[in-house]
Image (cartoon, rainbow, N blue to C red):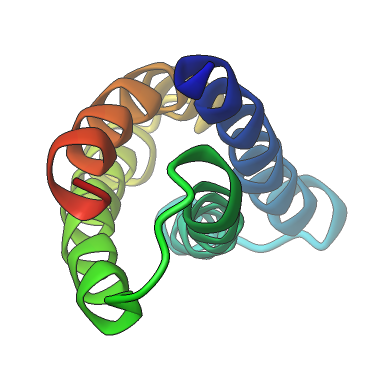
Length: 121
């Protein structure tokens, strides 16, 4: 059950991330993929925290501890996403869609493990 809830929240967070990046770059013409991706990570992370705190892991109390751990965990994920986007898209000149797709696959795995065993443990 928890895995299913995490998947639903993850899909919502991933879609939020993806749509933010695509909207900034393709719709608004934002020129720097790594910064557009940073906004995507932040919006997707907000959806993830709210969904996982209140629905997936249903943890009450210790909100300050959990949100601090979440911020640290997602800071690691955010940094990894940013470095990959910077190296592959901005410096490497490869379409931002390729590293975005790779990170959108890797991120849910990393965040589930971090959330399950540390953030909401």
